[in-house]
Amino acid sequence: QTVVTQEPSLTVSPGGTVTLTCASSTGAVTSGYYPTWFQQKPGQAPRALIYSTSNKYSWTPARFSGSLLGGKAALTLSGVQPDDEAEYYCLLYYGGAGVFGGGTKLTVL
Amino acid sequence: EVQLVESGGGLVKPGGSLRLSCAASGFTFSNAWMTWVRQAPGKGLEWVGRIKSKADGGTTDYAAPVKGSFAISRDDSKNTLYLQMNSLKTEDTAVYYCTTTYGSWGQGTLVTVSS
Image (cartoon, rainbow over all chains, first blue to last red; front, side, top):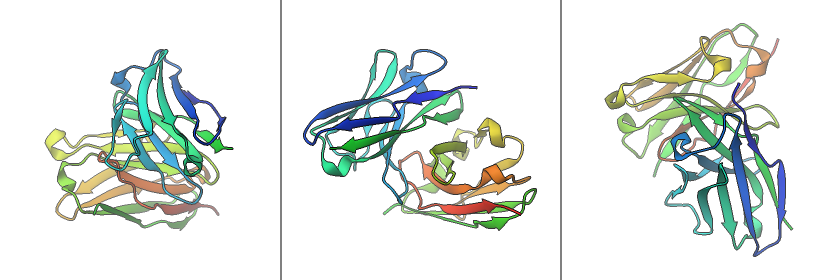
């Protein structure tokens, strides 16, 4: 069974920079896994932020960026704002099927 | 404006069936690959399955836990996505979301499987 692993929790100060990662139990994450990132706040539906590793949606704030880093998919937030406090999920595709990571709870403190 | 509105959730007994619908508007539904995602209470997101556009073959893919018991279909004439869920188990209790490859999500519909 394929497992996608994210940091359970991270804390960042307002204005700071933080990188969330997404690892695959099958080995290095490549662009062929079409890494996708989502943000979810309590009581709300998830919101897509990044698709296919590094592509942004029209609504994605410029401070969010996606990349591949050290064999993992990565989501970097630069100039973090209090409103960025949320759960972040990555999604990887294995052939046709997708697998979500367990999520990273980002605290802005 | 893109809108996805799920419906059909509710309370069902273990072993029962339910069909969810997702009404889409604001984009060319027939061109979109559509996905169902679920979230059990207090838990993370779980990918359920996806259907490609008919132009891309209209094929479906499913997560291992639901393969064989869930079926995704689409009616492009009605701009509607479906999720037929059979042989439901208590662990299928979740909010079910439909999403598009364009990044939009619905607000979800709650399915509770309980005796």
